Length: 82
Image (cartoon, rainbow, N blue to C red; front, side, top):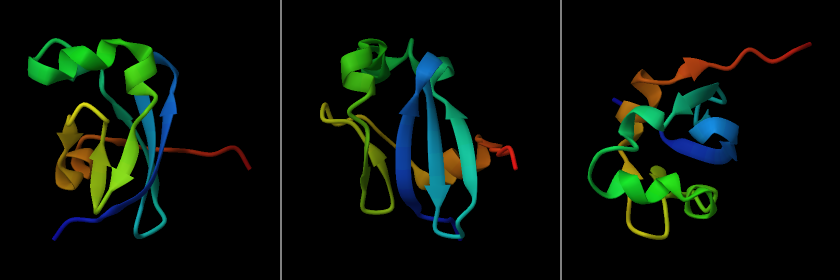
């Protein structure tokens, strides 16, 4: 079973801060995907910043999306300063 994405925040350098349904926050790096298929369109930072939660995952206005399981497995835990 995978965890749904509940919140997404675009960060600098093509990274996303994701909050999952278990309240865990993680950072996902989109850079490795930017040279493939439709992901190339996300190099335009104006498009990249338009990311939003869609159902249980994320997507951009141009139809590019990522599977929530991939997002969870390939992201790194965000360590917040206390």
